[in-house]
Image 1 (cartoon, rainbow, N blue to C red):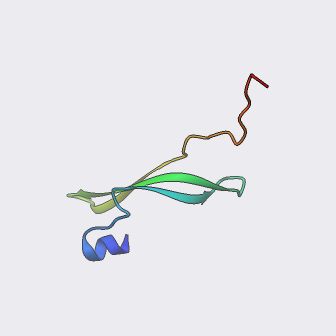
Image 2: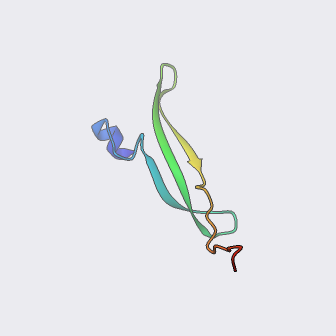
Image 3: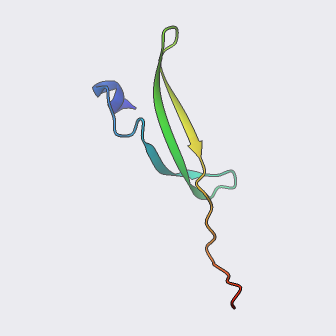
Length: 66
């Protein structure tokens, strides 16, 4: 965000970012983060972040064929 405030643009803002985050149990997990810069006439410049956990993929694959 410091780069965005200095230059007026950033590769991090308005782009999906995969980051590591710590969950409630203390484990690291991958999240999808999207940060958007918004300008409001009353509040000024604001940053809004959308956080989503990516789709969980099982580590093992069981087949019915055995």
